[in-house]
Structures are given as C-alpha cells and as structure tokens.
Length: 383
Image (tube, rainbow, N blue to C red; front, side, top):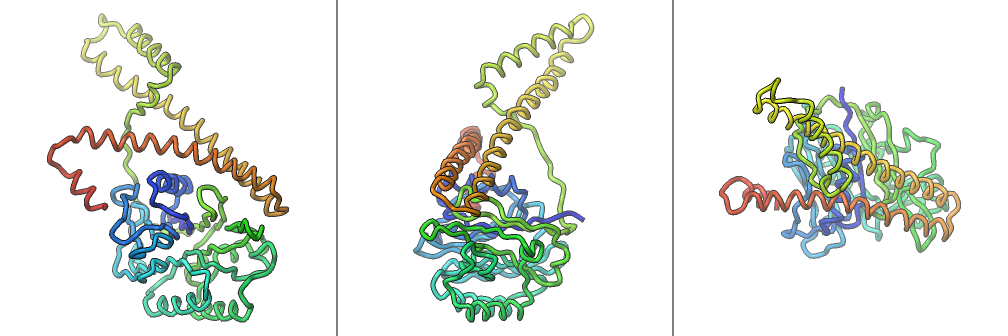
C-alpha cells in the first residue's frame, strides 16, 4: 500500500504568478497528493495558467465578480482519480467532487465558510453534501470557527455561542465526519491561524473524513504560517493508487553563472581528455563518452546546489516553527517582528527558484517559435 497525503490550505490569493509558484513549491515540498485550497481569489472566466504537471487535475470554484473568495481542489498526477460528478456554488465557497480512487468511491469536499452566519452556512452546506455524497467523504477547508474553543483557541473562547457550535457538531455526527488531526492528537494544542488584531491563535482549518476511512490515517500535522496567513494542515492515509513517475535530466543553466562551477567543469573536461588518449580509443567513442561523463559532473554540482538551497529553506522553516511556537506560548511584538522577517526571507529564497522555472518556460516558448504543434493547443486548454 502507498500513502496519499491530503492538505487543506487557505492560500490568501493565487492571482500573482509568483504567489502561485510559491504555493506549488510548498505543496511539492510537503509531498501533497490532494490539496484543498481556499481564498484562491480567482474569477470566473479569468483563470490563470496553474503551474503543475500536465496530467495533474485542477478543479476551481470561482466567484463571477469578486476576487475575495474562490476554492480549488488540486489532485497530483500520480493519484488515479476518475471524476464522475462535480458541484459548486455560485459564490466560490463550496466545491464537491464525486469519483473513484483505486476503484473506491470518494467524495472530495472543499469549503470556505463566511465569517458572518458561519454555522448556518455550514449546516446548510453539509445538507447539500449529504445529498450529493457517495462512498467515503474527505472534507478539507477553512471553517472560520473553532470546533472546540477550550483546546482550539489560545484564549479558550469563541465569538460563536456554544449552542450554535453544538448544532454544527450534531450535523457532523449525522454525516459521520471525524476531525482527523484532533483524533490523532487528542491532547495537543496547535493552531493554524494567527489573528493580529486580537493577538490570539485559532485552529480554523480542518480535515474531516468518514468513520470508515479514519483507521487508514496514520499521521496528521499542522504546518507553519509562511506564504499565507494560514498554516497548511495535512493528513496521510494508506492507499494503493500511486503510479511510478518518469524523470528526464535537463541541464541547469544557472550553474554556468557561477565562476567556481565553471572552473570545476573545465578541470573535469581537461582531466577526462588527458586520461582518454585517441591512441587507445576512437575519437567518436571518446567524444560520445565525454557527454555522459560531463553530465555526471553537472548532476553532482546541481545536487550540491539544490541541497544547499534546501538546507537554507529548511533552516528558515525550522526558525519560523520555533518562533511560531514561542509566539503561541507567549505572544509578543518581538516574536511577531522576528516571524515577519523570517517569512520575508523565505519568500525571497522561494522566488529565486520560481525565477528559474519562469526562465525555462520562456525558453520553451522561444524554442517553439511559430512552428505548428501541440504547445499552443495545450496552453489554450489549460487557460
């Protein structure tokens, strides 16, 4: 059995190409297979190109005029999801997908609840889910409330009356939906959102699933607040529905911009041709073999650079996690300033990686030129 990782993430906008790429980098780093995204801010008829594998599946629900809402479900190309039916509301707050994963019926539900009349909206929406759903339900979303104020809020209070929260609990029990993170972490206190005006932490983002699938979930965690004002929340369940990926090597041209890297490449080229004399082998063999040799040198250099960059990003994420934990325990202006600075550094390093991806895309368009082919139809299909 292979694992599938589901993630819910309020991204606070995806219209900027840089922001979209940052979000995709975070999801790839977290190895997310199914992502429930809220507050995408995408509008109907103005959907941008989403950076993903050509075979990945994107299902957006958008508002026709407002850019303050929007939800989407992204499914990695290694998950064999076969869509049967789709339902979305007109406001870009609800998206329901019904289909199959490895011959098992699943209903994927993504919700972004309003901050006014929250419980009424959720109860009404869950009634819609009940009529639509078949098989196992996996629900992710920003519910804009805490289900258990005593442990899900740093102030142990909620702005919503307990009788209304109890009403919502009754509806969740009716659908047999269980809070995955709280079930796997019954005594832990952690939060997914920080309210700067109220100086308090709350767990507003949830992953819920049917009782029948709960035993398949092995881990669940709340990430750090980095590129958005919410933290991503993830859970992993075992499912034999993954396929093997094929990889092809491509030269990282940015390595040639580094003087030390160029010196190393020249050294290895000189060493290779000195060690392989034409007296012992034909010129054509030496020339073809040197391509494989120098490719290995570039792979080693690229791996080293990638590890160094990843080490720096991991270090920033660890510092953010530490500062976030301290701020949760004792909120202060000093910790909040440190968090803001660390998040800025992280966005800068992520933007460097995004610039390389944009360069590759520009090169692809330039190399294609005005030739006929599948590139333009593929881009038009995405948009």
